[in-house]
Length: 507
Image (cartoon, rainbow, N blue to C red; front, side, top):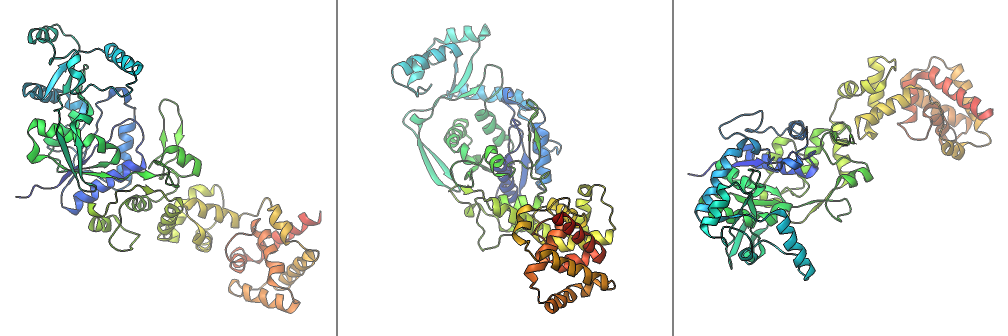
């Protein structure tokens, strides 16, 4: 009988969730749902020195905002808990003991000062890469070199120790990676990692493997940065005798800077003006605030769609997916080995796409808080949104354009005005004002055609008059169709703004 798929996302609560972590969680979620399996959340907080208050809640809120609800984990209790490694602490001791009893691990009594002394002496002799391994351990203070009664005496007296993995010599360790194929590492390249620390907490490696085994994890889908640890984890499974239930591994490619030169970082986002975190994060130590996609006006659907395509290539050329469509289409076989460059413009394209799926009424509700004390009817707001929305990438763009149209400009773009103002511009604008005064009953649907007829009768080119009208109405040259803008604002408001411009220029 085939074992049901069970995957986990296992972040450490050491800070905000990076975009790469969102992608790891997403791929785990998609894989689980594609195969009718279970998606678990496990908090790996064995390193208490790096614990950051609020990080765990931030991670969970981020996943929920992205629509990635876990089947089991914190706040979704099931049969495989607890889901925080700090709460699983009592169970790890027995597995460290099991390895020692099987001759697969050993006690090491070397102090930090002694280890540092060895490293310094090795550096002085030209060896900058000293490791505690199958060669050097014979010269160290551990249960492999000390008499059994001495080891027992040290244990009985409460002397501090760690438990290290006994890495075999001259052994090839094979990692079958679903993305990268078979990776072979010689055991000489692996040091005798600490599995159990002197403070009574397991290291990441022991806790990770034990938890994956006990929770029935069938596939470990994680970032490329964990690939060097995979041989060690395979060795741990073999040391425990758990090879029959060892999960399959898949190591995801890095998310790269927009120029492809290195891993995407918060600094890149700050420099180029885009978030690398799903939600806004306030550092509890420094008070520094980092922008989040949610607070930056990004749609969660856009973020999920964008992240899904950073390293995964669908079979066809489809670019826009709902979460259900992603589940249907996703496969690890289509995940690339090479890193994926973050494309800022493509990210904005996705957000613009999802903004365009919003109705005018939905956009109206989302931007009302940004309109301040602007007094406006719902009907006029909807009409204005319909006119300006096509250029917008974020809801705030819509709000700014609404304000830019419905509020008379407080200033004019000097460069725009200088480029369009000619010797006869005042005469032409005054002529348009006079014509509007003599045609007060023009209906909105006829304004555009009527102005064009007047321009033709006066032998005025559109380009000699209407750009100046746009500057008068909005302060600059950018904006929606000028005739539709006049129809929206009405003749009275249009006349007032043209008059204001004329007064300013003629002063």
